[in-house]
Amino acid sequence: MNKALRKAVIAGNWKMNNTPDTTKATIEAMKPLVADADCDVVLCVPYIDIPAALEATAGSNIKIGAENCHWAVSGAFTGEVSAEMLKAIGVPYVIIGHSERRQYFGETDETVNKRVRAALDAGLIVILCVGEVKEERLQGVTSEVVRKQTKVALGGVSEAELDNIILAYEPVWAIGTGLTATPEQAQEVCADIRALVGELYNKAAADKFVIQYGGSMNAANAAELLDKEDVDGGLIGGASLKAQDFSVIVKAASR
Ligand code: PGA
Image (cartoon, rainbow, N blue to C red; front, side, top):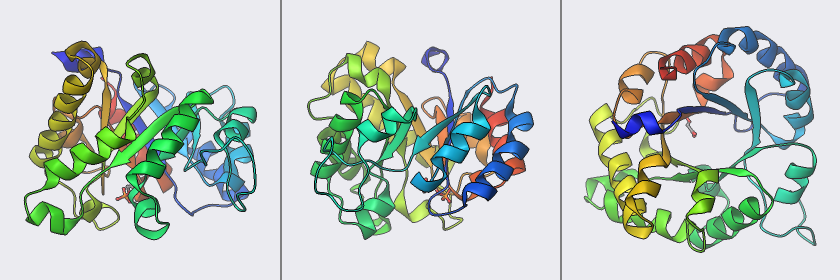
């Protein structure tokens, strides 16, 4: 079982939710509930909440991530934050290419690739998001779409650098909609992405590459999704805002 080669990663994506105060309260409630997790636990939070989150998680098994970063080290990019800045304040993880960034903020496969490059250069661990929209699934082009997004995003990434990339397969139609992909649908696409990594690099690289599912994963459906051979974790939006729900998902991933 190649699944045994990979440590599961459960990552929360808070999106534009919480203030420093509610960040602290949520993390304090979460810490004891996930303390014995046998998987990696990450919370990606708004930039403004990062200092509070780092302070609240110090000495715990919860790691903190940002939700995006710019590709330049510094410069005239009003409103942006660089990977170097995240690194400088001790943030280990960053989400890149989330579908909300692609949909609402004009991110393309090419800018996603530039951000991935910058994050890796800064020494961050990237949670790289890909996924098809509903029309693409209905047209039967999910594999083409997800393969292209993945291939372009990984352009210029070496095999060794794959150790610092977690890929999150997030069907856009399942994000925040309560419409979860079935475990079979999640498995099919995660296996397809792993096959692509095998084609782009080699089988050994593919076997240890961590691939998450994301899109309305919750306390009730996490176990059956995480049970699938090629699903190595989850990227959790709504359910990561609630300590109890998030901890149930972490427990489901602990094996
Ligand atoms: P959701 O979000 O769990 O609320 O669907 C997932 C995500 O956007 O990463």
